[in-house]
Image (cartoon, rainbow, N blue to C red):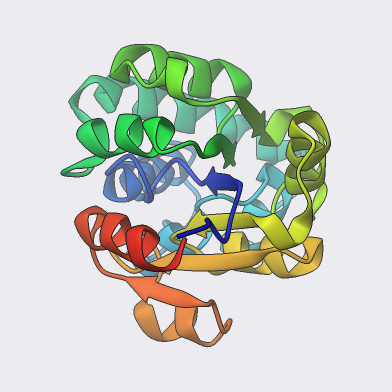
Length: 218
C-alpha cells in the first residue's frame, strides 16, 4: 500500500523521551531556588516545548523579564543533574530504525536547545535515523510554524505529505499553523482531552500503538 506520508516529524521530550516529569521537576526547583512561587506540576508540564518567553509568561505572568534567564540557568542545572536517568519510551529504540527502514524521511522538531538535542541524539544512538532537526534556539519556538516549514524545505517535502507527531497542544497547534496533519500521543506531557480538542487525525497511548497506527494509516 502506498504511504500517505513521506516525512514524519517527531517532538522529542514526552514523545520519544520519557522526560516530562523530569522537566517539570527541574522547572519547579528553578523557581524555588530563586525564591519565586513554585508553579504547580500541571502548569510546569503545560509549558514543555514552549520557548522561554512564552513559558515564563504562562508560569509567572508578573515576573520581571530580566529574571527569565535566571530561571533558565537554574533550570539547566537541575535538568542536567538528572539527565542521565531519563530514558526513551518503551519500543522507541527498536521502532525508530524500523520506520527509517520503511522508507520514511524522519525529523525532530523540539523545544530543546541544539546542544541539548545533539546530546540526547548521541546518548540514545538515534542520530543516524533522522534526516533533519530543528530546535527552539534556532528560530521561532512552537507553536509558530517555522520549525516545520524549515524542515520541509530542507527535505523537499510538502505539507500534505508531512505528519507531525507530538505530546502537547503546542505540537498540534504548530502543525495546524503549518498546514500539516498531526498525530497526538497521550503518554507525554498533556492530557488526552486537551490533545483531542486540537482535532489531530489520531491519538495513541503508547509508542507501540503509534507504530501500529503508522502501519495502518501512514
